[in-house]
Amino acid sequence: MPEFDWRSPDSYKSLQDAEITDIAWECLRRNADYRREYEVMIANSPNGEVTAEFRRKWGICFRP
Amino acid sequence: MRKPPLDPDVADAAPADQILTAYDERHVVTYMRLLQAESEGADWMEVARIVLHIDPVREPDRARSAYQSHLARAKWVTEQGRLLRGTGSK
Image 1 (tube, one colour):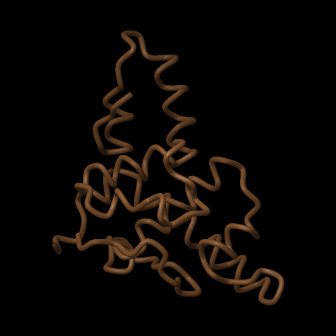
Image 2 (spheres, helix red, strand yellow):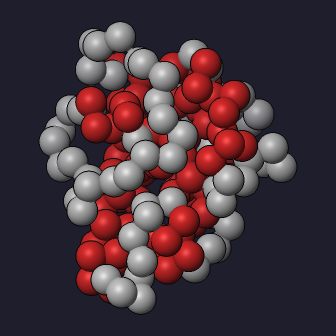
Image 3 (cartoon, chains in turn purple, yellow):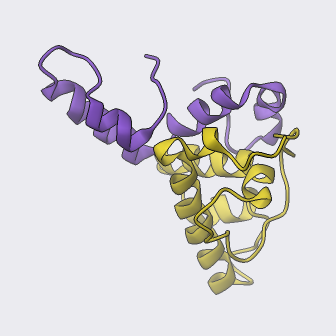
């Protein structure tokens, strides 16, 4: 996330005009618990896809 | 969701409601910065000072509990698409 620096509020400026889905995604991908669970889930997923259970838990659709 | 401020002050404790609140919407950038700082392994005292505007040397207890409650809330709002379901407000 080179464009975002948590020390600099101005680096988040672009998100002020973002759609709610973008904001939700930006939050989610910073969630360390989510990232850890994603790694484990995808490593154990038979077809390399997001499982229904994971989708239910985290709730939004995923981008790489 | 209205345009969230980039660097708002925070309350001593984040909301504990089971629904997304106006406070959550206003502090979505704060939540994002907290999550990002944690994932980068930042020192919580530096995060409290810069993001929450609370001096952890002068007010250690207040800074620590504000940091913990806001980080926990940030995780809560990101789970199960809560942010997307929102409050119904614009």
